[in-house]
Length: 140
Ligand SMILES: *[C@@H]1O[C@H](CO)[C@@H](O)[C@H](O)[C@H]1NC(C)=O
Ligand SMILES: *[C@@H]1O[C@H](CO)[C@@H](O)[C@H](O)[C@H]1NC(C)=O
Image 1 (spheres, rainbow, N blue to C red):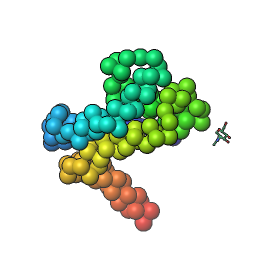
Image 2: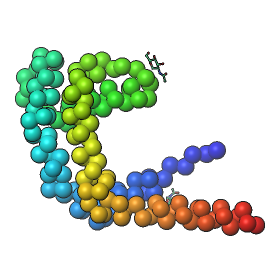
Image 3: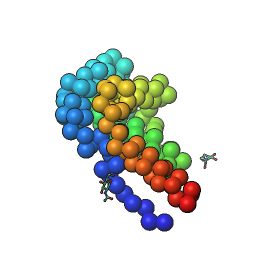
């Protein structure tokens, strides 16, 4: 079976002008996420990671640490391999970084803004059209 990649369906949010304007390109939309990145929990994680890497803490930021954590997570999830990046984080740090990602997904893809779910309308329309077609065909 040929796999058809159709980003206009699967990345429906990228093609929704209202979502792009109100969420994607609106710096204020992620203010809760930005506040958590600057908060005491993340500060603590940044200091521990900087210390483990023998780096001045000013050279790190929440985004860089999140990339290291995602690299660890994906290698474990996809390859069942414990990446060297994992050694930078304690279980407590992992909970902080998972919370940061949950918070981001809440505001960017989840319940945070109404347009996040409404922008999926085109995908669901396509799914239901295919289901209706399959029902018609099986009746025949
Ligand atoms: C992808 O899906 C959209 C919406 O159903 C459709 O208009 C478009 O033609 C599709 N693109 C491709 C390359 O199949
Ligand atoms: C993942 O790796 C661990 C440790 O090497 C092993 O015990 C476990 O069976 C592996 N799990 C899977 C699903 O391959």
